[in-house]
Image (cartoon, rainbow over all chains, first blue to last red; front, side):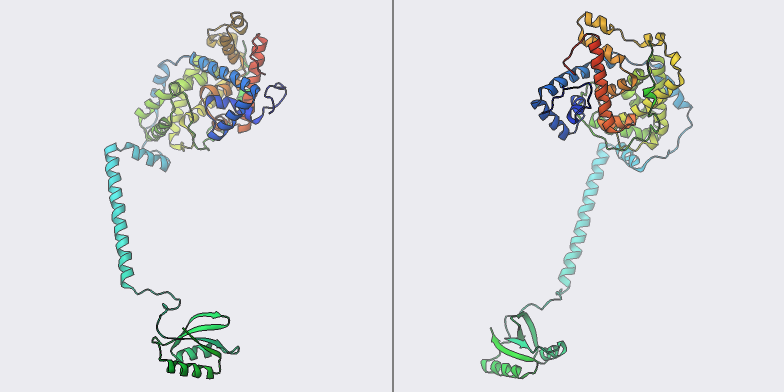
Length: 224
Length: 223
């Protein structure tokens, strides 16, 4: 580490060296104070300089304290001047200070009561909002825009539509067969549900044959 | 004795335009320093009341800070009578300007900035010729001069004398940092100089102090 003592007369102070007096006075932030402490532990020259600074610090305090105090004349003069000032009515004053002044003027009891009243108000407000939300949720049959919940009953089949099938044709087919696409495409196949009740096996086979005969369907397979 | 006051007369303008950083509380000797964190809040409230014309609040604020204001101004102007006059001027300014105080820095920092401005104005009014030996003698402390102090092997006394012998510019920064316990940022606000200049100016003030001590025969091991 660079010696703090080297060529002290002709050079600029190092960053940490310049902070030493403020460290002695306790005016550094925590981060800088830690940095200085670490440097002092590792650099004897810096530590020696810090010892000199502590002497300067102590003597500066003693010197200033030896200056004594002013006479009462200063105070008399001040209040005579204040009395001579024009009366002031709600002087312009920044809003933050006005608020601080207002709260500080309240007694602790008043502040406590105001705090309790505020807390009760917040709780009431929360109760009202909660009630309204619960009521709304119970009254409306909310559904997402996605597929309706998948029913476990019904007849299912995998369909592959012809490459040239149009959306209108597919919609028409689904409508004709009271069907809806449940999932897919997967490997080019859609899982389609027909009705909401499982058909007997024979009827299901006939349904698949009819579907296979559709122009826009290129492949049909039974699905569970 | 004649005092060089030219350096300290610089940077005196815009003395109110300093209130720009948040107040930092820091470790301090509470017995000596009236400004604890809770005190700072109270000071702001007092300023609020003063802005509304509360005379009692003014008395409380005065009671808390007038000694520091006096000592700071005395170290600058080196004349007790002028320093006392400055106190009433400073607090009268507080009375008038309280409504403009934004509370972004400590009230004590604001007070010292006003004090500094008033002191510089007072110094400017006085010609160098008026700062004669008689005036200097009036505020000279009772301790020995450096040579006598060293003869008595009284390093502390020599150090105090050398602190007194620093230039006004150096005295000011030493006092603000060591006695008034102002941070780098606060000193920069009060004096109206960049923060880096605060650090280097204090470093050179300390070097000057070491030179004065060395000339008086006191070796402290630094520089």
